[in-house]
Length: 95
Image (tube, rainbow, N blue to C red; front, side, top):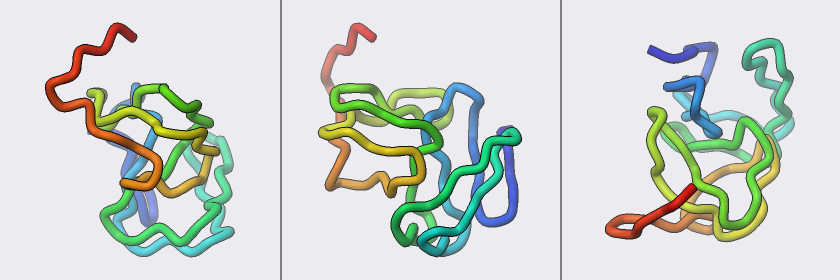
């Protein structure tokens, strides 16, 4: 299993997002592998946030698997949801 810490879980070291296990406040600092991430928006429980900068067109990984594609740049600590990710269901990805 991945990294579980107070308030979030990172399922795989390949992931570029983590999942909130509780509501996470804006400006809260999260420590992942000795890297401090400042949360940029309120993250609702069960939602994802970026653990590194993600560029428009980059794949989003959770569980070590592709779950979508960034529709715009996403900064480390940003909320990842339908406003900045699209599904790749039935789409071929060469990355």
